[in-house]
Amino acid sequence: MIFLLEAQEYSEISITELFTNTISKFQNADEFIYSLDVLYILDEIEIDFENEIIKYVKRN
Image (cartoon, rainbow, N blue to C red; front, side, top):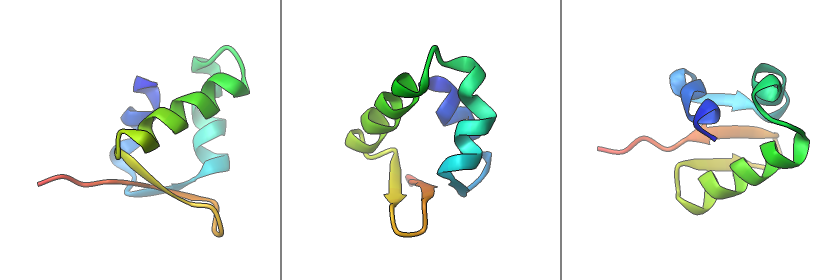
């Protein structure tokens, strides 16, 4: 899951691009999806399903 947070250099990234950039860090696609779920629940990311974009939440 930490690998997904390291992609935070982008404020937004497509789900496909993030998957392509990080899949080697996961055992399978399920693990990638579970990691997205956890980050969403923790309010670290927002997911725009319509445009297939992940937005990293910025905290002050």
